[in-house]
Amino acid sequence: MVPTQYYLVLSAILFGLGAVAFVFRRNIITIFMSIELMLNAVNLAFVAFSQARGKLDGQIFVLFVIVVAAAEAAVGLGIIILTARNRQSLNVERVDLLKL
Amino acid sequence: MSAALLTFFALATLATVGALSLILQRHPIHSALSLIVVMVAIAGLYLLMGAEFVAAVQIIVYGGAIMVLFIFVIMLLNAGVEERTDFSKLAKFGGLPLALALTGLLAAAMVRHGSAIPNPDTPGALASTETLSTLLFTTFVYPFELTSFLILVAIMGALVLAQREKN
Image (cartoon, rainbow over the protein chains, first blue to last red):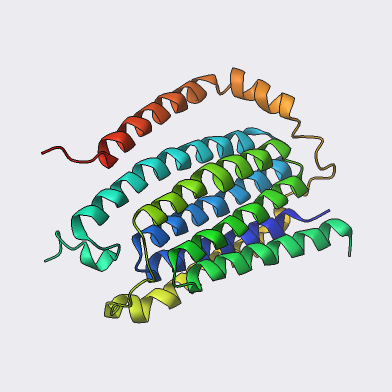
């Protein structure tokens, strides 16, 4: 049997890699994908805790997170299409209307 | 080393390599394919933990629906190789150490306090789909109904945002 700790450490590593990708990538679609990676890492921790505690609430929560992620992807990609159409670029450095 | 532990390490390596590949690839479509690898590996981990329904939903919704949406948008916008721009000084010198510190802090906390968490002794006995659905439609029925409203709002939002402007 795999200890719960291992799953949690893997979850932390995946979350950290997602954060690195979020900070260092310049393409707006890749940045959005790194958010999905971080959500996945958190889901992994939820299921690991649910199994460790012997309660199913964590898995229900994962289902809700997946639903919210799907809604977020639909709206977020709509915004990305709109930005790309207005700016002719997917680089986040070019979206600087609010920058001083 | 037991078979479960071996499977765990194989899947964990796959997920980590996929996540690294997501960071290092320069083309968004390669990043998207790496993310699909990560999601399939995580679905395998759910199966290993005995959460069959969540594993199936992970494959269908994440690996299927969401990633197909991403790849469609990448192809729709004809996204090419990411152009290199200068980082701000803060991101250049502070970003990587801070992100590594975050990872290290999280992992260290899991290692130190993780031994207090009890390990499940009978995998799979807990998470039958029947008990999961009973819980979803009794205790969590109001949040469940609210998600359908959320999806409706998301559909309308995406339609309004992505429609071509009429002059």
